[in-house]
Image 1 (spheres, rainbow, N blue to C red):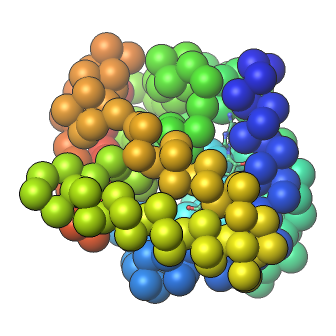
Image 2 (cartoon, rainbow, N blue to C red):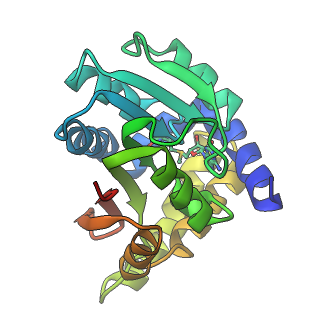
Length: 229
Ligand SMILES: C[S@@+](CC[C@H](N)C(=O)[O-])C[C@H]1O[C@@H](n2cnc3c(N)ncnc32)[C@H](O)[C@@H]1O
């Protein structure tokens, strides 16, 4: 594991307990709705085998369960603390929670009809490897559906950047008792790829039909892409 990944892993182990609450506050309650949309995009395609990567406390995995009770769902993450919470929350019946690093997935080629993830890509040390792994474990015709943050752009960008720099570490300090981890979350969002650059990386990994839907002043994006049949 690269240094960046070990430090990201330590960060998420540290923020796990208050993560969902702060996430709700940071997104003014929209996170759940976006996760529902990510799940709906995945379940709208034929198939029953789902992988929710970087599952955290399992919000997207449980949305898939709600929308498609007969689905076979694996929720995978490399934070033991996040997985421990995911196991305790109601609504995850039958979901298999599994430790896994997104750079090196412990699944056979062509195992899943859809791979979902929320806020994974800005955290990884090797984006191309992570997308290649998703491509490998998807069946031909399978889809990726994902929520990712996006650096602010356009005339409001300086104001949004300033707001993020003030509000998010303050929430982290007072609610999560961990300002440094939430400063990391802001830095990783502001330093992440533009939607145009990320689209190119999906295409480079072999995906087609790459679509993106902006949310929340374009600071969040719902992505979908398909592995050719
Ligand atoms: C910001 S949280 C999002 C959790 C959940 N998807 C959500 O939307 O609420 C990011 C998650 O990605 C996980 N993560 C980051 N890098 C990872 C990697 N290389 N492999 C597996 N999980 C990773 C973290 O442990 C953390 O649980």
